[in-house]
Picture 1: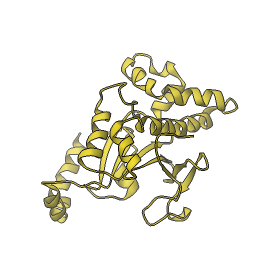
Picture 2: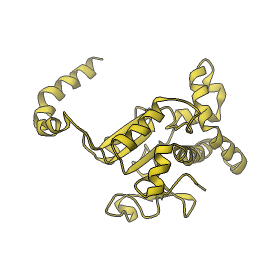
Picture 3: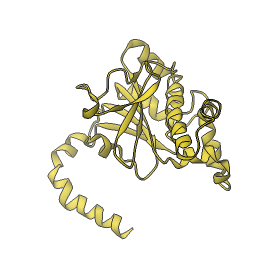
Picture 4: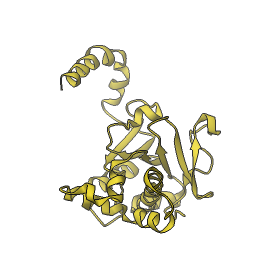
Length: 226
């Protein structure tokens, strides 16, 4: 806690004065470009990964970057999605999974969740991803199996996201795009789901990034994810 309080002091005395104009502008309104849905994992920092400033991203975090399908649970995730789309008018929603995800490891190995009934119940919203992996990747073991589940979970949550009325409506109007990412903690790379190829592809300047920051074909246009 001492280190956290020291950081707070540095922010107030050194960082804030240098960016005062930005925060004064943000004090009365916000206009984020995207909703960034990701895991609660302490190693994932959306603003660091995307090099964005305060006010650029509307963020939602939970164990496993999960989006319950509409109507399954009246959760903070559903409320956040609705507010981001209808009140803030975000044009993009990114679901970002990550390597070495503890939630996905728990989904693969339920014994790890002994004594954590709330976590186990929450991860039921990712059961479809687990079944897909079990049925389609019987040859994978260990880290490779976990990586496959991490990717399939992002695709499954994109499908769930498309069931939300606010999202479905904006998708139909062509005013919203969905993106599925996986961030690699060890090397900083990010892959995005390409529905045309039905696989994840590297994005970034070294991968032929377009001007808007997304590789062509990496946006998921609707809930029908292959």
